[in-house]
Image (cartoon, rainbow, N blue to C red; front, side, top):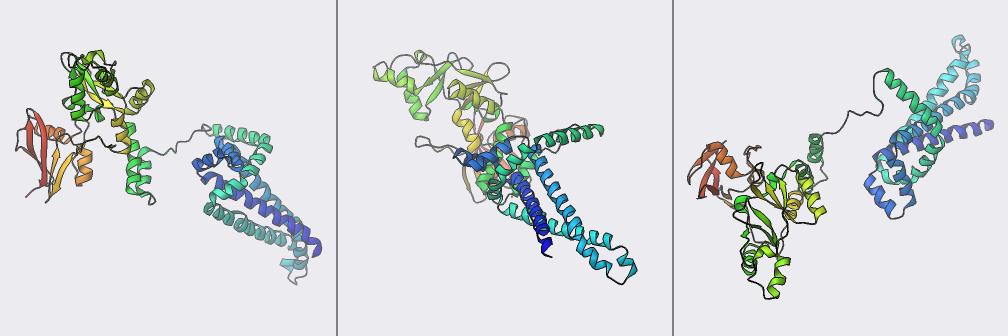
Length: 431
C-alpha cells in the first residue's frame, strides 16, 4: 500500500490542477471588468495581469484553460488505470467466480476510471466552479497571472488548435469569429426591469441612456414659440434686463424675425459693456456666431459637437431653413440624467396640479412625462411629442377652449388657448 502513496498523491495533485483551471474559467468569464480596471489603475499587479488577459482574445485564454483541464483529467484517469487498477485486479482474480476472475483486469480498469471520473467531476469541476461563482473577484485575482503565463507557454498549441477549429468550421459553412447571439436593446431593457438590485431611479437612468441614443434635436429642442430672443437693435441694458426676467444666460439675436438669427448673446459678453458705461450699445456688437444644425441631427452627436466647439447653444432649423427652436447643453444633459435645477432657475412644472382625480398640465408637457406621472397610456407617435400635439392630432383642427378628446375613459379638455396655441389642458376621468 505504501508504494501506491506517490501515485495517489499524483492523482490528487492532477485533480487539484483540474480544479484550478475550472475555477479560473468561471472567474475570468464572470468577473466585472470595470472593477478589475479600477484595481489595476490603483496599482494592483494581480488586477493588471487579469486586465491584460481580458483585453486580449478570450478564445486564447479559454483554449489554454481547456488544454489544462483536458490534460489534468486525462493524466489523472491514465495514472489511476495504470497504478490503482493493478491491486484491484489482483483482488478480483481471487474471486471464485469465473466471469469475474477471467475479466478481472477489465473490471478493475472500469471501476478505477469511473471512481476517478466521479471524484474529478465533483472536486475538480463542480465544487471549484461553485466557489468561483461565490468569490469571483478573489479567484480571478488569485489565478489571473498563472493562467496568463500558462496561456503564453501554450501559445503554439493554442494557435494550432485554433487553426484546426477554424478549418473545421469552414467545412460546415460557418465563419470563424462570427457571433449571432447579440443582445438586443429590447433584451437589455428587459434585463434592467428584471434586475431587482436596481432601484427605480437607477432603472430610469439606464432607460434614459437608450432614449438618449435614439432621440434627435427636434425631440428635445425648446420650440420656436417658446424661444426668448432680441432684435439686433436692442440695447445691452434691455437685453440684460430680459435675461434677468427670464432666467436665461444666453439668448438668440435676430434681424427681421427668428428665421434671421444673427448670433447668440451671452451674459458674460454683455456685463463688460455695462461696467464700461456702454449699456446703450446695440446688442449686435456683442453677439457670437450661432451654431446652426438641422432638426434631424442625433442629440448624442449634437452634444459632442457642442463640446468640441465650446458653445452652449445651438439653433435648430427645419428642412426649409426656418428656425425650429434652440437646444442648450443643459437641455441635452437633462435628457440623460433628469432635470438640472440651480438657485437661479424658476419653478416651471409641466404638471401644475393633480388632485381630486383631475390634473392641469401645460400643452407643452411631454406625452411620456404625463403618462409616467399620471399613470396614463396616451399613445406616443413620431407625429407629435406633447399633449398639445396629441390633441391636435386627434381633433384635426385648431381647437378652442372646452374642446375635448376622450381616450379609454380619460378626458383631455383644452382649458386655455393663446391665439392658435394650446396653453393648458385639463385631464380627468370620464364621468
